[in-house]
Image (tube, rainbow, N blue to C red; front, side, top):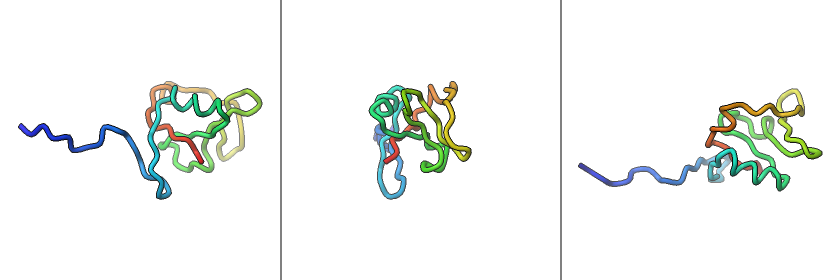
Length: 85
């Protein structure tokens, strides 16, 4: 039996030539409360779909503009969150 590790234990993804560590929901919230934007990789376009703290409220930006974010179970359990630069 071969016990070699064939994949990295750190989850990362290249996006726009920059390697980004993927975060859990709680990890990304720590970034958002510092007024950073974040997105889930599954959402696709990081410039169109992202969350941010706006006037003390978590807001989601999408193709229709900003609206108050309703957090889903998939958002809570997702591990594909990244900070948008």
